[in-house]
Length: 273
Image (cartoon, rainbow, N blue to C red; front, side, top):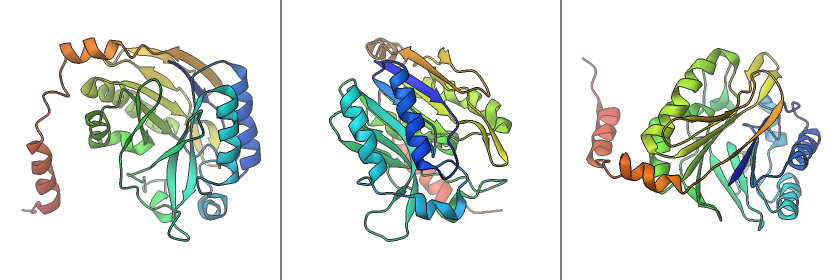
């Protein structure tokens, strides 16, 4: 399975231009998966404009990308503001997975970052599900940026059989060291491949560091894109390695479910001294 990680800079509130950028990168190289960063369709800091930029899964942007996926016989992963299909005015910070057969899956970001320069809870509703998605290569789990700081997300995906975890991101330069510490840890503790794709360059007051990368199930770095530079890097992933790795380091087998009940009780009902 060949994955292409695209560290690129979307234009703010310009979906037409960003779709063209995606199309151009997909044409540049042959791969099975093309992965773009968080909110790549719209640009990241759109604030009140997110309402106007958001679309449903039946919207024109996804229709255009479905056509490309079918023509290239590939999967496309990217971020966008996604409309709730039942509740008017409700939108999510979402990761979209388009299959070559036209199927569209999505994940809504569960942990919305709202401190410092980030205001996601003002504009988005929190996601409530973490599902894995079957592809012809294996099972894929999606999560977004700040979700990385909560290991319960990736554990939920790995317990559902995820072979590859994909994290799309809009991470500024001040947080790079934290991400590069946690990424291999999440791969190791779940014995999964982990692909991380970050936007690069300025997005208003934020400067994003790019540096997209892939880790194997033992936390070894397989490929890394340059910092602060637009690029596309590719990596071939051998999912057959998972059987051996998980036999030698059976962290999925050794999970104790009662700990999660304990964690719920401690988090939900803890008392302050």
